[in-house]
Structures are given as structure tokens and as C-alpha cells.
Length: 417
Image (cartoon, rainbow, N blue to C red; front, side, top):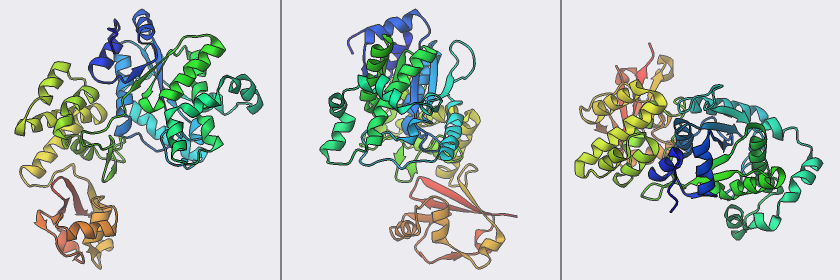
């Protein structure tokens, strides 16, 4: 981007690496410099929590609010009933209204850690697009909104084109998703004066559709800004690991596991992640990211502490760091490790070590646990485990056992009572 913005928000987006594309940099910058700009990101309610893959967008909303503007978190109570086809190989499974409502309640809890909701001029709004989508009359919608869309143009969008090029089915239901998302932007502009949609670069086509529709129907000028689709330096999708998604809800991924995910960041990603996921000054991010050798581990601890404190609080971040030191440096049992509590009656006849590794989440299945043991990746209290048929009883567990999968993943087994 060659444009040098006057507004603090655009400067932050550029300096910290959030900006992929903007529909009109100069026009947006002038709007940001002249008053409070309401801006939104839409999140479909396909799970009970958001995961780390959504954190780049959440941080964009956080910076928007910190620089004097108004975030709108739009829950897709309506669009989730259709499903976003963008860059997917198949159709999303359809959820019931009750499932969607439960997922929205879970996602709402995550947002409150990052942005402030309320009635003030820069306080965030939490909205649900079911408010205007559920009551639509289909024939009126076709006549008033559908006529503004060119099928030829929609087929040319990369998110759709990539699906069709692979000769994979795209249902009429999913094809309507693009129109509904565009209509969201129109309604947010009409009802709340929303001027900006933020999103990942895979949403570019949907964002442009909304801008074009609003210009045609209301003759209002609005804007779109996208962030890069983030992968780690070794090519993995951000927020996904071999053990599954890194959820932001502590009930689905403990603060210690969350902290450990960031502590395990690849050396090459540390500086970039500090800029995107913390609020440390740019110069400090560059300094920490440039550390080499064993010193880069200090930078990773700073990263883990900063990101964990923002979501779970400073106390949880400090406890996670202490647990990590207990486990890795002192070889002890950390208080914050994921824990299985067993009732005495559960193990009256003994419990298999394979079952313990599966229940702890250190293995996805019994087969996975047996493979881990066979490949010498499993330990109990630091000692190698080689017997896949090992049964444990209450006296074996005693005051507690530490299970380990490799060097970095651990869990505790304790007895109730």
C-alpha cells in the first residue's frame, strides 16, 4: 500500500501487518479521520467458541475501538442457517436454531475479553442478522435485492470459482449466502450507520458485493478492509494443531494449553505474531523477534504471557508460565495441567493406560494412544511407557500421575476422595 494514512487505525493496520486489501484507502482514511466510524465483522455460529484462527479479526476490532471507533460484532444467526461456501470443498452441515443460539451464547463470552460493550459512542454492539433475515419475504427480496446481482460476476469470485474448477457441487442454498452477506452490510449501514466491513481476505468477494449493493440501493459510500489469511511459517493453518483447534473458550481449551500453544511458536513467526496478537510497541516486537539461539525462547514466553493475559487474565498467564517451568525445568507436576479425576469405583478393576491417554486428550483414540506408546512417545511420571496393555489401579495412581505425550504435552491423573 503506497497511501500514507492520516488516521491512527489505518496506520496500526499497516504497521502491525493486518492489512491485505482495502477497497478505497483514501476514502476510508478520510472517514476515520473525520469522526467515529462504526465497523463490523460477521461471525457465523458454527461452533460454541471461536478459535485462534479468528483472533486476527478480533484484534482488528480491538484496535478499532482503541483508536476511537465503534466495533460491531455481527452474529450470523440467519446466515448460519445457510452456510458460507467460501473455499470449502463441500456443503456445511446445517444446524438447528437451538444449536445456533447455544453457539452464539458461547461466542459472546469470548468477545467480552477483547472489546467493551455498552451504550457509549465507541462502545461495541453485539447484533444478530436473524433480526432482519428471518422475516424476509422471498419474492420481495428477489425483486428489491436480487435484481442488483450479476450471476456472471458472482461466478468469477475466487471463492466460488475454485469450487467449480474442482467440479465440486455448489448448492443454490450456498450460492444465496453471498447475497445475504451483502444484504447484512446494507442493513447495518441503514440501521446503524456502519461504514466499514472487516474480514479475512477470503471474504473479499462478499465484502465487495455488500459495498456495491449499498451503493445501488442507498447511494451510500462504504468501505471494505481485509486481513491476510494467516499460516505459520511451516505452512500450517493458524489455530489448528494435530490435537485439534485452539479454542478461545477456557472450557474447551484450558489457559495452560492456550499458553503452551503460543510458547511453542516457530522461531520465524515470533516477531510477526507479537505485532498481530499483542499490543506491545512495534519496536519491542521487532527486538524480541530478532533474538536468536536460546534467547528466542524468552520472546516466546513474552508472546505466550501477553496473549494469554489478554484472554484469560494476568493471573492465569502467570500460573501457566509457572506450570511450564515446573514441568520442563524442575521436572515436577504443574498445578495448571489438564487433569482427569477418577472415582474409586471407576478403577476398582483397574483402568487401561490407553484409556487414560485418550480421556486426557493426549491421544485422539485408543489406536492413536497405542501408536504413541509403540513409537516411544508416551511417558508416565517421566518414565518411558512401552506396554500398551498396562492396567493401573488406585495404588498405582497414589497422589497423582503425570502423563506425557512427547516433550511438550502433559496431563495429570488424580483420584477423587
